[in-house]
Length: 382
Ligand code: SF4
Image (cartoon, rainbow, N blue to C red; front, side, top):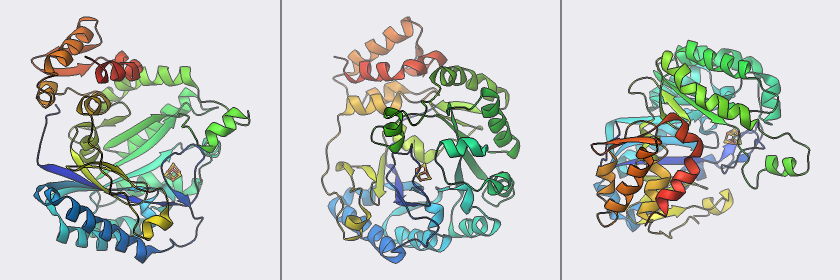
């Protein structure tokens, strides 16, 4: 059950480098090959400079308790454990960070080794997620991912044997040429490794990516949309039998193993985000940083804060959750709109799209297929 909480926040650090820029990816990142990370020391200094300036601009940040930290990107496993340890030590001197904070890091399979996992554990990382996407080399090639397939064969064993007990992985389904059987073999492989968390994404075409351009000029094949719908509807039941529950459109976990950090995005909590390409939401408002490493290292990051439209925020965050949500406690934020929004949810419940009883809301499985139109209806209800 998701409840509204206040006074807590997450800290997100966007690490801007990857070995290779995958053609379908629209996150901000720069491919650097197998070269050492450029400007490592400058980058660390720039994160701390941004942190300092954001606190000066928004002293309210000092009143918040930071109970999650997330190193994302990009590929933060390229940064090295010493970088992570130094950043965390400094961040603790600026912000109030809970002693039992969830501290997650995204790692590419190629970077994972017994030594790195042990060093990351010693640096304070207590949750790790790896972007497997597929165990089959031909599908990784279709996705234009850099991959060392030998490493893919050992990575889940390394993770399950590590001291970092909370670990998860991402897979993509609907890749051109991928069969349903192959996808489920991948899912089973993750489950047998004991993952506590699964992120299962359908391949999508993001505007402006090389993949979308290749589709237009006919040099790439489109995602298999019918298969994606079939899989999306089957997965919850399949995973329930294996003791993983569906809590967000693309995310499943064992009991109590939700990503506490990602839940901040879906429950309208604050998150202070640092780094090039990072988007944050803090008491002063929302902001989006430059998608240029050079500009970021030169100290140019956004100090323009936009006030959010709460009804729209609720629509694009809360409605992504598949688990039960105490939605009335969120609607209390907008007392003048509460009745209208309750009427909208009641109409959905009446038409069999969701359950809504005693202020608790939960989508039915099939409703996730039409989520975009429900989000629009909620955001524009009046
Ligand atoms: S490794 Fe991940 S973040 Fe980097 S380009 Fe590929 S999908 Fe994007």
